[in-house]
Amino acid sequence: MKVAFLVPGSGNMAYCQNCLRDISALKAMRSSEHEVFVVPLYLPTSEALPASGKGGSPVFYGAINCYLSQKIPFYSRMPGFIKSFFDSESALSFAMRFSGATKASSLEDLTMSMLLGEDGRQKGELDRLVLWIEKEKPDIIHISNALLLGVAKQFKEKLGIPLVCTFQDETQWIDGMSKPAAAKIYALITERCTYLDAMVSVSSFYSGVMSKKLSIASENFKTIYPGIDESLYQKSSLPADPPQIVFLSRMSEDSGLGILVDALIEAAGSSSMKGVALTALGGASSEDRRFIGSLRRKLERKGLGKTFNLIWDFEFETRMRTLSSSSLFCVPKISGSAFAYEMLEAFAAGVPALVPDSGAYSEMIGESGAGKVYSPNKPAELASRLEEILGDREGLRSMSEKAIETARAKYSSRQAAEKYLELFAGVLSLKY
Image (cartoon, rainbow, N blue to C red; front, top):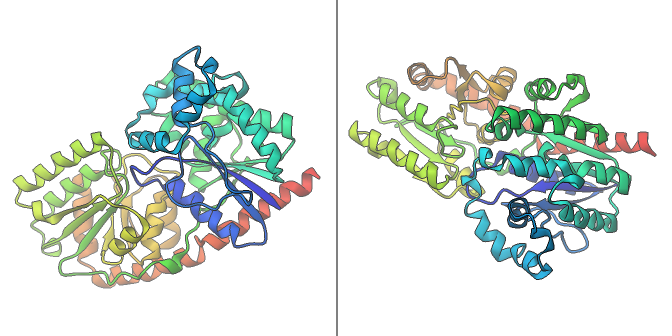
């Protein structure tokens, strides 16, 4: 079986759990007897991914050309060498520097145009992609995000290849737009879903979310949890003197870093929090950096500046090293995620979690016992729970063992790959 994976590159400005989910699944699938290759869209992928056996795929729907096609009506008539330049590695690498700073509200028209596919302003890019895919002759195409579904109609009508799409955190982007724009985008996704042969969700929680957003019955979504290769991670010693809290996510207000800092200030006098240190990593946009600066100044005014350790590098080796010396994972995200790959990385290192009772956090903690959830997601409540959990060393060790076992038994990359390949085979058996 030959599988094409359409993956949106996000640049490398901040921690991207969607990218890591794709990377983990692809690497595990490539260890099977099947041929699985990547087709990157928008930007180069942030970490090395397995390429096509014919030498790899170019980046389609290059971010710069897509943007200019949307903003300049006559751009489709521009000379080919100009478009080729904007799709070059150097130009896209430059665009990657700003990828994390883009707000959804400023790209409503572009998002709708991309979903319109053959009727959108990026039709030329779609035609180029269809021709390339046709030459590669995959048996099945996996679309890793519903925001890419503008390709579905042409793929189905011109290529006749079965299509599978995974739904993962699209709402984080769409719900940041105006209500009229968001409604139109959800309607476009619903219409494009009619060309799919199977739909996958990354959690039961998110199946329910997308079922409501798209007015599609939840039983039409098959849940396949993302996986991780837990053997790559070093087990944490759960340091207690002082305890080390790790925040692994984009270091932004939406990810709850401000809530965590305020909780640390509130709990500073507790005996179980004596000398506690916070290490934050996961990247940041220029806007995020201003927010981080305000948090640092707040801690310094309270005499806690030295307890806040920022790490700007968030590549795998740095993440693994940081997790292996952490006592507790805490990312108090303001809105619930479809899945929490960052928490799964903590599980793989045996680091228990303390997270809000929302989204996939609730699902993952409830099924594993590898941490605790709290509500409401306010600094005072978090401070109280931090004191409680860090003061129970035996409880931390017990949750650490459960975290490792959960990563191994429920969220292994091998298991996720097998479920995807089984789904692909089932779709093909029904079609041919």
